Image (cartoon, rainbow, N blue to C red):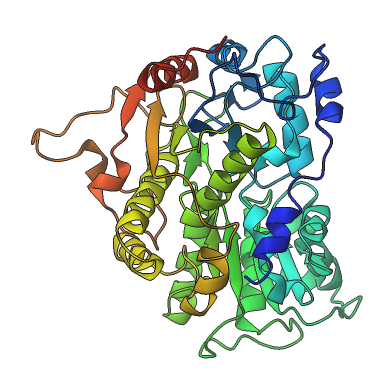
Length: 441
C-alpha cells in the first residue's frame, strides 16, 4: 500500500463547477470550494451517507432524501457540512455515480465526494502491472484501468477464447469441439468488483482460473496451494431495490464461490483483501475526504465526529462501529494495538493492512485521522426491518439470531447495535443537527 499518498493526492482533480452544471443548480459558487464566513456556523462533524436503501431504492429516489439535502446546502448550493457518499456499489466509475446523485438530489456532487467499494484498489499497486481477471458488470475493464490496472481481462474474454468451458446453458454450448481461439496471458490475480449477470459462467471460470493457477490450458490441480491472489469488493449479502424484500448482493455471490471452492478442494478460499463496507479501510478513506472538504472550505473547527447513515446492520452499522472502535483505541494506545483490537473483533486480517504496511498506511501524514468518534445511524427505508420478530429473551440482541455478515467477519453484538434508529434520512439529518446543536443559516 505504498501508493496511499499518491492516491489521496489524486482524489481532488474534478472541477466542482462541472458537477454544479450537471446538477442544474444556479449560483456563483461550487458545492465544496469557497471562503469561510464568520457569520455562518462552522461544523465540527461530517456525514457519511450510504446510497441504496437510504437515498434511493433501485432507480427511485426516497422522498425524504431530497428534503434532507435541502437542509445540507445553503442558498449558493454550498454544503453547510462536509458530506461523503460511501457505497458498496462497484459497477460504475465514481464520476458516473456523482452525476447520478447530482440529478437525484438536485445538489452538486463531485466524484471527490464518492467512495465506491473498489476505490481502495488504487493502493494495491503491486497488482497494477499484473494480468488480472475481473468479474462484475458494467464497464469493468474501464473501471479497472481507471484504478491503475494495465493488463486486464474480463470473463467474456475468457469465455470467447475457451468456449468449451462454459457449459451450463445448453444454448450457448459450442456445436463442434474447438481449440482455444486466442492465446491469452496467464492470469496472475482475480478481482471481484460486484455481482455478475451470469453467475454460472462467472463461478465456473473463476474456479477454473483458481484451480489451474491462471492457465486454462491445463487441468485442475485441487491440491495446489495457495491459489492465486483474490481481491473482493462489496460484501453485502443483500441490498434494497424497488422490491418489497431485499435482493441478492455480491456477498451472496461470494458465499457461492467460497462454498463451491471448499466443496471441490476441501480447503477454504482465501482473500488477499476484502474491500467496501464494513472494511475499516473504507471508513478511513471517507474520514480523509471529510477532513479535506473542511480544509478546502477553510473551516477552522477540527472534524471530530463522523455520523454514518445506513440501512444495513451488517455493513453500514458494523463498519461505522468498527471504525469507531479503532478511533477509540487509537486515542488510548498506539496504532498497532488498535489494529490488534480490530482483528480480534473481526476474527480476520483480511479487512486490515498487513503489519509490514502499517507505517505507510497508518502513520503517514495524510492517513492520521482527526475524528475521535464515528456514530452509526440506522434508517428504516432499506434492508433493516423494524418489524422483525423480537427474541423472547430480552437480553439477546435481535441481530444475533442470524448473522448476515461476511464469513471472515466474526459476529459481535456491539458492532451491529446502531447508535440511533430513525425512520428515514431526513429524520437522521434533523437528529444529527440537534445532537450537534448545529443551526445552519
